[in-house]
Length: 333
Length: 253
Ligand SMILES: Nc1ncnc2c1ncn2[C@@H]1O[C@H](COP(=O)(O)OP(=O)(O)O)[C@@H](O)[C@H]1O
Ligand SMILES: [Mg+2]
Image 1 (tube, protein in one colour):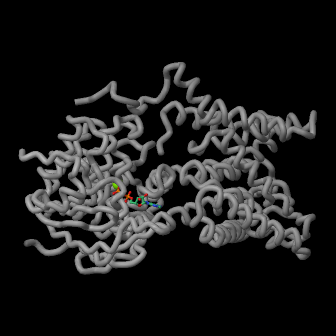
Image 2 (cartoon, helix red, strand yellow):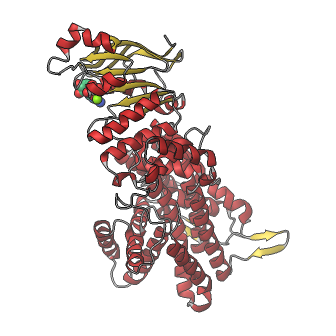
Image 3 (cartoon, helix red, strand yellow):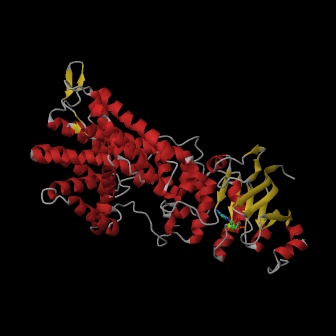
């Protein structure tokens, strides 16, 4: 997958804006942007499944919440733990859960896949709901953010909100580049083939199960990164983080932003968090408005907000040059 | 005669009470074009589905180069060098022509679990994909999205994608179905060219085309083989004429 030239410039511009934002925006809004970026990573990880592998997972919050729990569990009440081991540990925990859940679910397709991922995620949810040692339905607090020190030198002090902001921004950019690289690899080619036509992918010699499984694991690990950041940010984790409605919301966000675009889900996260923040004060039914918006987008903008953006770029005639030929007009000889 | 490349022994596929393929024992020889003809519903497509691993046999076995492949999945069979096309065009509609062939060509890597390597730098794969595209006559359509092309071109593309997997044995399920005369002629020429260095099992309705390209013919009716032989033998066969050609004109061209 390649970004078109205007999209590349817009992304660069967005990153620059994000980079200067803490200096110009009020603290409240900086916090909001952190939430957007974390949610963006989470939604992007799901886009790898829905938008690029064709797997509509309805249990993605399980991997998000699980990594968050791992961080909260390994952090004592008296001090923060080192990020150098707690981050890999949390991500690996999500990866392991995704490996187990994926092993069973990726064999199924369509509605069965949706149901089985939902069922597994609910199992994880109920486990934490009943786990009194980890706060049961109240969940846990994270009293100290992870530390990033080498020897006695503090490399990053994540307790500083601005430092944490840049750490999250760095994670977002790294995730985007990583997934983009993944999609440009031989592996990426195969999963996109699976999305386009799985049985044909098998018939030309790919054991599609393994590719779907690995994609599921990678997406789970990336969701784990988002969950780790989320708990670091909010300082709390509860079973609600991995409940089915969280899985539903992240699907909405991906659809809202635009499936199969990677940056679209980040835009979706932006729209979602801003809507949530503004509407929440006026009405407790803000999710209803959100739902209506998603329905409208599904009906009129199949490529989400990103598609709208593309249309605007196209109208202004600065659409990418590597636009592909649609039809017979330009028979080259 | 050339050695046997593929053989079936009492191969059977049952769907409920229907035996779509009913105790079929056949031999296919290397470097031959062996056509299978028969009326609609005779079980030809089901037979190809069995050979390609799309469908598991109810009973019976399939041997390819002496190895029992009856229980292998479609991806494993493809990797052994058996390529197929489908009666109902089966390509990657959202991919460009080149991307279709690239995915085919890349399937010959030992595996594709490379996560950070750039696929575009696999020059062998790219070259093979471009060669197959040239072979199927679509070089000038590299960047066209498959779904946007004409029906005939899509069928050509499917053959190109299959060739990118470098198969030895081709299973072609009615490659001419639904094509216009000019397109069909192009595909017949392609099949004749492919005959030079491939073994081909061809299912085809167009008798004229079959008589021109086939070395051997098998006639299937109701899941059973009723005759196998050279083109001349089949044309002379009374039983075949009654069972199958009753309403077809067998010209002496
Ligand atoms: N998946 C299936 N389930 C049930 N019946 C099938 C299936 N596939 C084929 N059949 C039946 O098997 C018979 C042979 O079909 P097919 O192999 O498609 O014939 P042909 O390709 O010679 O026209 C038909 O009666 C068809 O209805
Ligand atoms: Mg058929």
